[in-house]
Length: 313
Image (cartoon, rainbow, N blue to C red; front, top):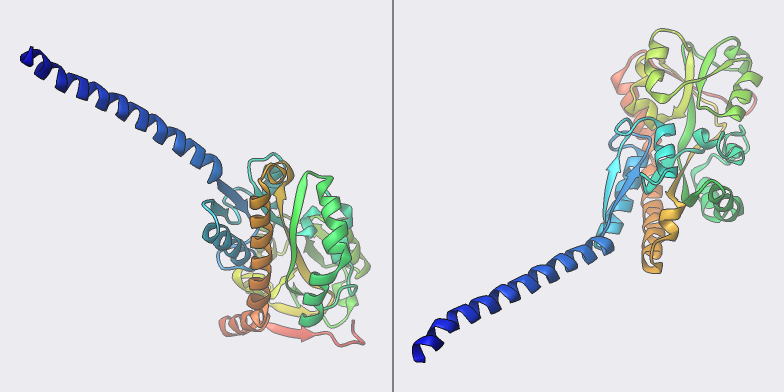
């Protein structure tokens, strides 16, 4: 009988071990599943290149999310998932969780967003611009409702920099735009503005702008100065005109079904991350335009800079 017991012991302890191992493997799998529900990998796309303003905003947002939760955030830059229209469609379809799209492109989807492109309506000195973005009822109350109608949760609107026009020859008055084809974003109001200047507005996706300037298919375009520098536009359109007609505004948002499905804690996390990124970007853009202009002037001898005075505006 002693032999029998000895013979059973290893078996019973082995089967206990197997049973335990099975339970812990199951528990581990269940835990991993629960964890993957709680810790998601969110996807975020924007319209710019590495180190540009939207990229800095995205990475500050990512930093806050990852420092304050188990979630991770994957950032996609310009061209990785297509152009601006593509990433908006992917967000509305729920493929992307977050998107940064400028109202210049959203104008056809949300006509009211075009207000940011009425020339000389918006303030242009830094402090007033920042104050406007912090306190504007339109930005903080009205626009979230308009975006919501399109299945988007507007999280933050923020400024990127003063708009600068580049042209094939120096411009000192609106008449100088006569018959010039100026590339604009796909935005009816922007087109009207340049028509009023006597130009021929030419909507083009960003990816085609450099080549179109190079081949003289268009004679000019408008963008913040840092973008003119990082995209090398000054190489093919060297005459910079500071018209003071407005700042480039952009907007960061979430797919609304995704956002509404978040826990209250995660909604707060997302809001706090957007606030954190906004504060960081305000510091980042201060002095950025001067820095970009200095880089351009260092890189090219052909660049001219014209600043329109009050009378010329």
